[in-house]
Image (tube, rainbow, N blue to C red):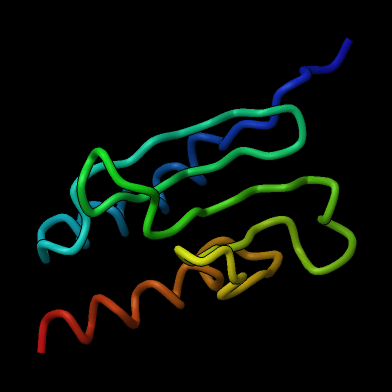
Length: 102
């Protein structure tokens, strides 16, 4: 029987945690949480531990054939970027890192 949960693969987590580390070093992010659910894996990013996530990085394998299984979702629930390649999708957050350094 196949796994009932979607999870991030080690290579996907390496890409996400690399960005996370740079954002923590820039003072933008402070905490994260990972949820592995039936149809989606979610990496949530927080500025402070007790608040709602600033961003959610989602992996939905069912959307692989359509818009792409990766998405970055903002605080208000708006999809900021969706696509098939995780690194490309995460670039929407890296732009914020460039602004933070200036």
